[in-house]
Image 1 (cartoon, rainbow, N blue to C red):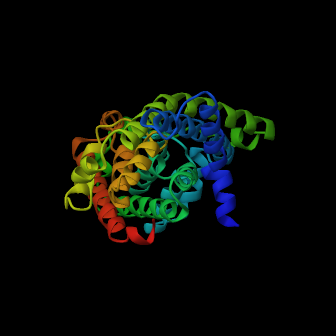
Image 2: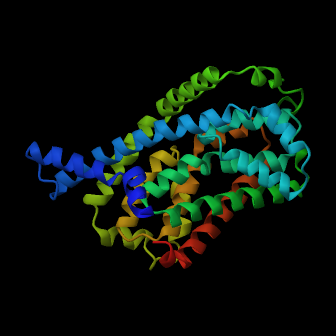
Image 3: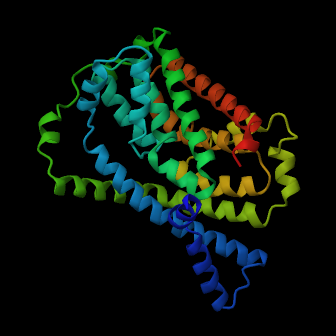
Length: 333
């Protein structure tokens, strides 16, 4: 029963069949390379669009209850690793890319949150959210989706905790940590249900508007990999027989500017070509957290030393997560 519901609601297998029937009725052979590519592109594009709108609306509605000042109050009573845990979990309710997370990161530093907590948030926000959980389940399965989310949260908590113990508070310029964040307690308290719905729809328009080009590019690349690049070529580069496949995937993902939504079709195609789950997950994590534009934005509000520590911790953590998943991949697929 669970598989039936999952296939209908998240994987939308009925949508694949519907689009395949429509393409066939137009005279396109969906079993050919061209037809299979068109089917892959149409199906993934429509499916991701539907899930994006629904999931981001729900998440944004929830997020309307957690402005920066409320987050500070929630975290103010916690110390040590538990503060990092909550900081990482707060990142799961923000369906933003890395660039969009940095303004919130600055707001948290101005609100006086410890540096480790803010970096736990900065790691988890673009990498792990409820949308990624549902979309990963729609493409792969719930075991892989849950493993990705758990490892992402562990990386965020461990990374933030390590940075807490490095005495790095002075590595954030005064303009990014001094002053009081806007007091939005009264504004949050006066929001009506209509206001929250309006806010959620505005976030849907903003987020979908930002990620849509990358989704189309990602689906296009996924269709190319899935139907045109020979499996032996992919396996030679990123297959299990290459002991450096996880490292290579992590380094290849860093220059790419996209988010979890744009990388999912590529990940789907790579897994179908025999690439290990851990290698694919490393690529996805690297893309979402270490994109060059987001790092350039972050460099404006942190020192070079802090930037280097952040990038080093994330790369090391992503590589460890990738090899760990590859070791246990047989239990997840």
